[in-house]
Image (cartoon, rainbow, N blue to C red; front, side, top):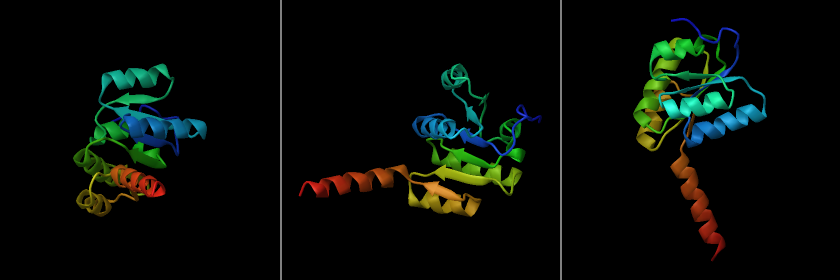
Length: 143
């Protein structure tokens, strides 16, 4: 499959434009880092297009889609879908297509975290754990 963004090198692929993916994109924009957003939701794709960002309507778990987004030339990939199984499959696919790409992803439980590590993820964020710690820390401030 042909890379739809041949001008991009050392860019970031952002897989999933939900709450986490949107925040990742905002930081990339602030830092002037080139990126491509990949999502399956047509409404989200339209929103990203309206913002003037590079976007690809497709399934990030598929080799075809990651190739179209330029995985071979990417520096890193942020896998931010809200589905552990899809995140895991995306890690496997990305690692297969680019052995050097830095892979950051999210997980909702420890079992999946271990599988993501085995699959080749370089960094795994666990939003629920972070949120839980912050809530407890604030609760203890009240005592």
